[in-house]
Length: 351
Image (cartoon, rainbow, N blue to C red; front, side, top):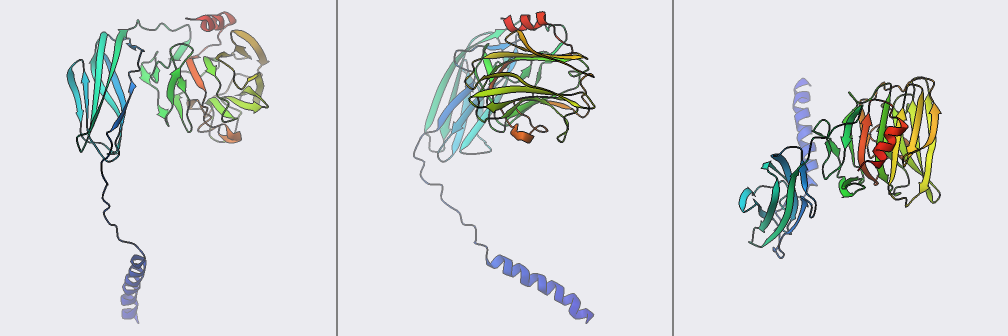
């Protein structure tokens, strides 16, 4: 019996494997077809008519382009001012190459970028981008300002000089001042709270609503789960033909609602929003004027709030459908202090 037992188990496994394989179709090679059209090409950075700015006289930049072919891309040649700086022949997706090419020695002045894409049958497309590189003076933060994103065709915190992590595929659009962050579905940016949040905290930014979807998270600093006794949640929600913009603050033992802080048309043009939080009070400003104030029984509590999300309620404030925001954001600033009415006016009128 023991012998039958030991021989029976492997035999049963072999029968099962044969039965499983019987229903699987073999994998057959499929011819790619005829290469009928030339590649397409879109240079997404630099942007036509906009200078490349840097605080460094010799800057590192990423030239960005998207090449697509109906069958297979053979090569992408990148030239700067008559010199070949890159010749790419290997791509993760052989029909669609989304390229971010690093160049480390861009100097001030006028430049000519030429990108040429060739497919395997020799058909080509070439595009030229003329642009200027300018050195700008180092940014001088305001008192208490620890984070500043102007969204000038990059996701850079100007104060720290660090790239801000991006999820999804947000883009850029014409902003209030230069370019602006353009939200996209399932997209947002994040940044650690360390060194930014405290018992006093402020933020300010320009905002242009896209009312689709009807609800969205705008700026979320929230703990895991649906507790709102800590952190901060700025959001928008539909109200008939209008949109309510609301704020929720956690002060440790309870939550404080300031909702709505303002109600605006769904097609509202650019508006400036500033939130100033002291240990005992929260003040909301729209276009430089205070619109709502709320006394706080305790300072804002940041327990469990490790990151800031911009452009969504993700990952922790997604209940009530506060998902990604498709609106535009510009000139975003965070402060470790409660900014005054005079400072709000300075930011609002800043050129």
